[in-house]
Length: 336
Image 1 (cartoon, rainbow, N blue to C red):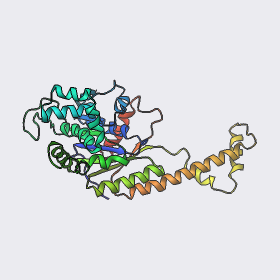
Image 2: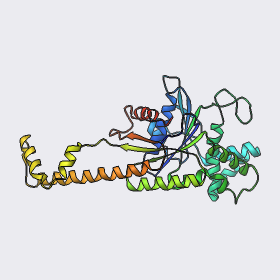
Image 3: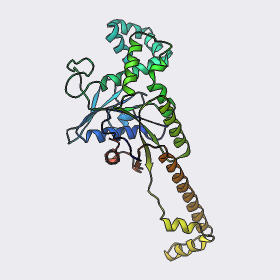
Image 4: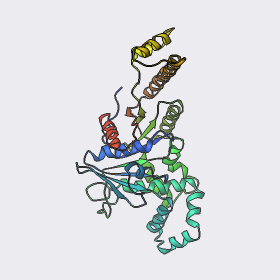
């Protein structure tokens, strides 16, 4: 099946069930883009400081900070969006609140406003990403036409909330319908909706070849389609190479493999204790069953009709060039 070209995408939204490594994948996508000589912003909205940990840099704040410079000339800038800071910026932009915003924060009004209406909170969070995504390289804002006072980016990567919440997070227009029918918040929500539904946006879903993550991926894709949000790729993360060869796996299925295992161990000079060969056969059969399950889950992923990218399991983590390795794999498989 032919898959759409993702090279034109400006906003890469990365989601996935918790624990699947979506922050690692988002970081790899950002590095892959930077290696093409682009200036890239990677932003997180959950306050977990996952990006700073991945890149081994100090904790990110609400101000864009350069965290990587590639020899191609590309750069990665990082941002951890804070809802309170976003609201203060919003009040200043639309209402010229100035010091009044600080007074509101002192009396707890900011905390109240950012927690009482989740939809409004999401508008504030993704609104910061929306503003940054609108700063095109070339020096002028695509909406106002005025020269930028801030950095312009060739692409933006959003480390989004997990699959269980990502549709509500992105579908801000529907979320604020009851609390903001008119006014600046509604206008901002409408603009954000146009951006996230644009052909220059893609939502990538990260999964593992395990039953719960794959089922959440299938459910998330259905929700994203229903909300008319643009689908990107499915990223199968932490893919492990088989430890046993195909002939060995077939031999495990024979009626009496224990005798053969014991003979092989003795021939290799291993002192075989009672039960050792049987325990090894049992473990190998469990491993074979695990591979069979992964194969069935891989078929389910493939049946979703999206580009499927597979990123290798890194036993030593993302240190020592791990992110660069994943970035190269992401680029080779058409994620950027």
